[in-house]
Length: 218
Image (tube, rainbow, N blue to C red; front, side, top):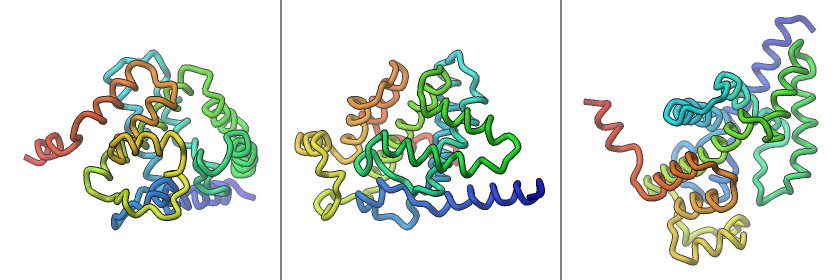
């Protein structure tokens, strides 16, 4: 294939992520005209990374992080958005790595891009650890936004397998709101450092977004 074909084929493949709705929101029956797509999640997590680097001055290569986050969902073009409640980490890793390899195989820089994807997935370098925490926290922040908008009814969750997870059930039974459950689940499950934990706790304890947004409009 020509270079022109490679460029367009790769773009068209990635463009499909604009139409892949995040599975977690579908499982919880988020009731909203527009529900976040994978492409929108990628944008959100990159913006979160920029803000976290700015405010906490991490000693990392932020451009490498932004690149990692741009490609971290490539596999979902082929395998779809599979959550931790649907498939084991090992099984997802196997099919996702194969998918990413196939997607990148026609690009001249495909091997380099694949190495960056695998670095993110291994979560061992400072940039990969930072990017991983951004990826997890962004989802929890989005749940808070949906919760504030009243998009989730916990009394109508028929067929929601995620709601049957032991930790999820325990948190909801303790009286947590839907987004509080998401945030506390993340605090307990993910290896957040002190800064990410602080932001997660702030989101849990406060209404977010509205005062600042209104101030910008004045």
